[in-house]
Amino acid sequence: MISRENIQQLFEKMQAAGWDMDQKLAWGYFFKHKTIEPLKILARELEQNGYDIIDINQSYPDKMYWLQLEKIEQHSIDSLHQTNQKFYQLAKQRHIDQYDGMDVSLI
Image 1: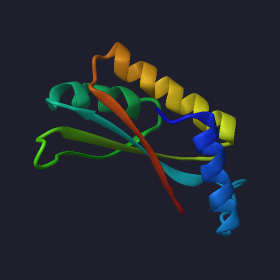
Image 2 (image 1 turned 90 degrees about the horizontal axis):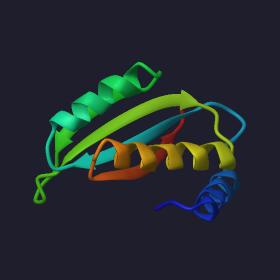
Image 3 (image 1 turned 60 degrees about the vertical axis):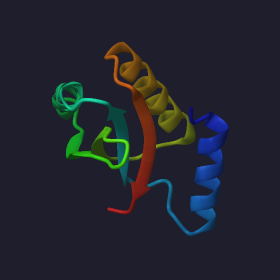
């Protein structure tokens, strides 16, 4: 589980590397499950909430399915922590095997 302290460290490293954390960035979010259908359902639901579906694919050798979503948004440490907590809870409620965290890139 990604802690608030992990997010704070991420923000500090990004700022030290010259990232402007006060701008909108492309935040990617990842879910993992043993079958594809629950991920498709989740993807459609989150798409209605402004998330773009980037990909659903199967990884090897574990043959798990990965859902990658993206949303252009500005985050603070606390807002990203809240988003992660929401996605951990959503995965649990939908019986998705795992919310696997996020990544970020420039727009």
